[in-house]
Length: 121
Image 1: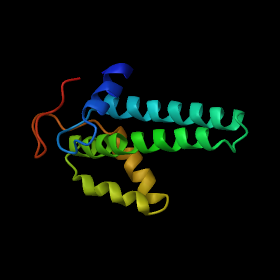
Image 2: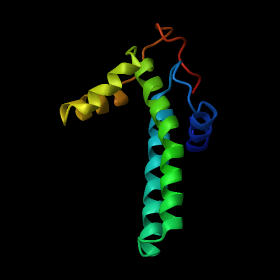
Image 3: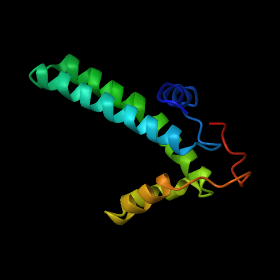
Image 4: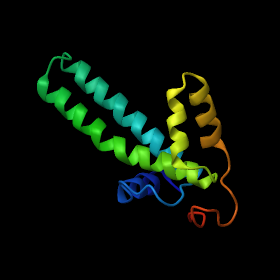
């Protein structure tokens, strides 16, 4: 899956928490989130950091990216045959982050699992 396909797929499945997401879909969308965040921070800082309009745009963009990011994370866990609730392990400092990072880098299960068929990449 390419960068554009991944971003498009994640926005088309804006709040779809069912199904599965490939590693490429997850990581391309994560890169998109990072790029948007960095650009917005640069724009806000260039505006002096006190512009209400710029801060509002940044906040709206962050909120708009939150749900598809959460949904693709849950679908990524489904791809390795784990329930989406495992995402809550992120609240355990350091250990949760490391475990999720390992899982997000793990190859998805081959064939059908309890969350459906593997996505077409």
